[in-house]
Image 1 (cartoon, one colour):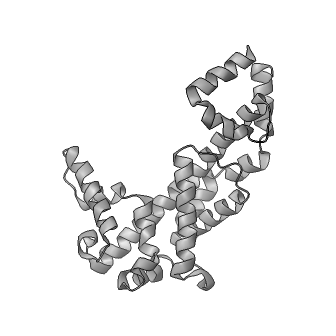
Image 2 (spheres, helix red, strand yellow; image 1 turned 90 degrees about the vertical axis):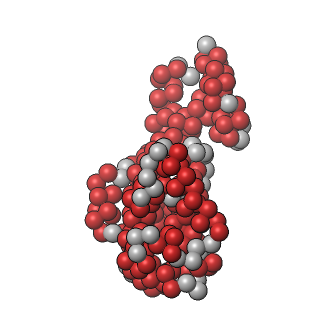
Length: 224
């Protein structure tokens, strides 16, 4: 019966998704425990990613609104890709019969849009240096270069996308350091947001417990 149960899960989740948890030849119960552990890791990281993305977006928007005006995304020399993203954001709102006001457009722009503002393609633009000076002034001097910040933000963006698409992350050897870096970036952006994170962040608890609680759960629940 347990084998049937796992096969049913393979049907609904797809064998391709579950098979990545068995690449070392482990048994079905361990694969299922790892799958559950991965879900819980993603759930715990969602807290930090949520606070980071909202903090980054709003800090950058506030700074750019001060720099160029509330409609900065129509004034600043953004590249074609970024302008397309703005246009798409407005289009989504218009399809919902909503007026594409500033307060509605900003939340529609993806994390990739915001992190792209701190990349080499805008290194000659004064708005970029203004963003770094205004929003990231708490970043250590040795890290406060476009090259370093781009690398950090790209790493976060990749993590965010994997978590958002329910992909496997438990095999990443640097997951703990990625979480620490993510929390540190929130501290750069806003101390209050960082303090709030400290009250609700449970990543360390989940990560340190590891897969064992889920091995026990699977064993007890389905008698493996």
